[in-house]
Amino acid sequence: MALAVGMRVLTRALHRPWARGLRVAPGRTGPAAGGGDGVRCFGSPRVLVEPDPAAGVAVVKMRNPPVNSFSLEFLTELLISLEKLENDKTFRGIILTSDHPGIFSAGLDLTEMCGRKPEHYMEYWKAVQEMWLRFYLSNLVVIAAINGVSPAGGCLLSLTCDYRVLANNPKYTIGLNETRLGIVAPFWFKDMMVNTVGYRTAERALQLGLLFPPAEALRVGVVDQVVPEDQVQSTARSVMAQWLAIPVCRPGVQNQGLGRAVLSPEALGEAPSCLIQPLAAPDDPWPLDASRQSAFPPRGLPACLCLQAPLFLSLVRTLVGFGVHPKSKRISS
Ligand SMILES: CCCCC/C=C\C/C=C\CCC/C=C/C(=O)SCCNC(=O)CCNC(=O)[C@H](O)C(C)(C)COP(=O)(O)OP(=O)(O)OC[C@H]1O[C@@H](n2cnc3c(N)ncnc32)[C@H](O)[C@@H]1OP(=O)(O)O
Image (cartoon, rainbow, N blue to C red; front, side):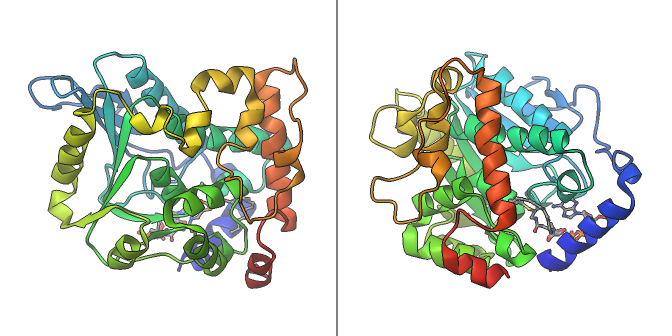
């Protein structure tokens, strides 16, 4: 189905590039009501934030209809919300979920990836990688309350979280299904999956573009918990309480020898070469490509430029089919 939808979206975007932008997220534009205890929600048209200051937690709801795909506007708003919460000492954790039960996120917006100018691809790609890094490296505890289907980029986003709670609905599949669309997941998507489920499971999952239904997702470890649909939020809350009981906020980000421990937000500005090798295990059996081994970037280059070069390389490699396990290429072709 994903393949069919992917192709349909792509064909439409190619034929009606002007139509893009008409279907913006409707959503509420003012501060939303509710939020519990009289606390006001805030956010943006595409991202709703429900703060619970007493608990030090905010629920971040993606609301980019119809499928929470990662349009540039949506990614920008999501990152602004994250940054706001990070800069507010009231909050130590966020629960990331969808405002549209049934769809967590359809991943990258396919209309952003065709029929545009090269500069747009650069900008878009940079935003995608920034979303990944900012969530992965956030100083907040991030729990994913996955209340819908979560293919490709949607899965990636949930993999950046510290813990994933998935609603037990057989329709709510999750995985990196790129090969089924005839494209190849970038190495950093793959690395996230390898880190989460192990090499062999990730290899098979990526080659076949598997979308795991809940029971299977739990079995292989793509998610940490599967609960009845009406308990996703409450479970995420109790998990969050467990995490926040630990005095060191987001301990995984601290120095515990985990992949992300080698990175810090500061490093993004000063030593962006970290960007291209943060997740590689020393014995990573996947073929390393040039950008991951090089002394990139040259000193003195502005961070934004340094960011874009590996992204561009990654995109080019993806498009020409390099940078992945060779068997994936066979399956995707
Ligand atoms: C396909 C070739 C792409 C070429 C790109 C080239 C280079 C890219 C290089 C590297 C990228 C690699 C990394 C990629 C990561 C990604 O995330 S790619 C996106 C993968 N996403 C999917 O496979 C999900 C596709 N969607 C679905 O399976 C379903 O839509 C659904 C999420 C299960 C929801 O199903 P349902 O509720 O039945 O809704 P519809 O299918 O009817 O969809 C509603 C409308 O939403 C549009 N839409 C769906 N997905 C996307 C999307 N990802 N981007 C943009 N738009 C999307 C769909 O067309 C419908 O639109 P209309 O209402 O008909 O206008």
